[in-house]
Structure formats: structure tokens, C-alpha cells
Length: 262
Image (cartoon, rainbow, N blue to C red; front, side):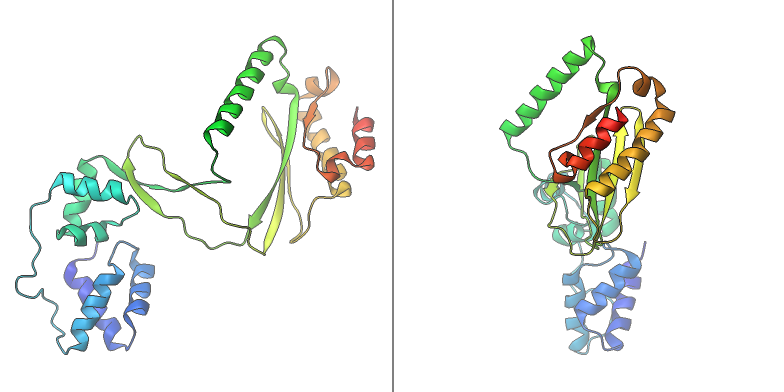
């Protein structure tokens, strides 16, 4: 961990190289991490350097108080869990290490945001719960879940978005936020699986999507792998294919392929 003097020396070095505060801050956090120094602190020190004062000491009366109110820290963290240690230290006028140690004492840990396709409302969540319960009850009398095979397609994005982290209690799950729209550069991944695990996966060419030909070809590969992994499923009752009514899934060619596979 860099000391205050080391951070200020780096800031002065960036200033003497003729860089702007925003550029200097970006260089520093890229090299040392996002918690090293805030943009606001960088701007304040650059303002001081531009005035002709290149000393690295705090101005008189600017020193930080030593006492840290746990309730104040907890309130700040819960109000904005994405605040960095450096930002919390500046808000409370205490040192970085003081905040870091106190957060650990309070049982707070950094967790990444969890991405979800969209936010579900209460009615949608209840409906999913009801359907899941009904299927589990049915499976007690008819072990159909082990026979089920499904496939899903997912775009793999060329996306450089950064995920933020939050200060949360150790047993508190990360808060969710919706996914953003698809990026224009993407590759499709298809995955076939059953209750035992993945049966087949495949990356399509960039920009290529699933059509009837691709779907039938992958059906053959999946069926071959299923016969090796779970021969009883193939040779006795037969697998149950779970898929939606997308055009490749309901085409005449796909229907014929499923008939051929039995």
C-alpha cells in the first residue's frame, strides 16, 4: 500500500510531466488500483501545484482527525456500497488504513455486482416458484428430470465494461443490476446439457446465428455424447428435448431429424 507521501510524489511527477489531473488520475489508478487516490484529491493537489506550491505536506489545520465514528462509517457504506476506501477516508477525514481496518472489524467485504438479464417483479417470481414446485412434485412419481435435455444460446460480447464492487456484510448477497444492450461485435455460444452436466457446446463464427442446419448438426453431436454418457436414457424411455418454438427448432428439417433420432 502506498503512503500519502508516495502518492503525492507520484501526483507531483505527473504534474511536472504536463499532464491534466484527469489523465494523471487515470494513469495512477491503472497502475496502482482504483482505491489509491480519488479524482477529487488529484484535482486539489494539481490546483495546489499550479499555484506554485509543490510541497507535499498538508496545509496547517488540514490534518485529519484520528477518531472514527463506526455509525458514521456504516451509514456512509450502506448509503452507497460502491464507495471506495479512499473516498470513505476523504469523507470522514481519516486515513485510508483506519477505514480499511474498521470496515474489516464491522464485517464488511467487497463483493462484485451480480448481473441479471432483467429485473423480475413479485408476480413473475411467484409464478416461477409455483412452476418449480409443481415440477419437483411430479418428479417424485416420474423421474422425468433426468431424461430432460435442453439447449441455450448466448451471445458472447466483445465488451470492456467494468463491474463495480460493493461493501456488504459477509453473508449479504451482492445487489443485482440489469444487463446493458448487446454490443455490435459478438459471437454466439450454444450449450446442450442435462441433469448430469454439459453434453455439447459450440462457438459459432462471429456474427453467425443458429439456423435449421446448425441446429440439426448440433442435435447429432449432442445425441452421440448423450448415448456415451447416459446410454440408459437413450435406450429405454428416451430423452425429453426441452426447447422453445424458435424457427430453427420447429422447422421441417428439425422435425425430421428428431424423428430419425427417435
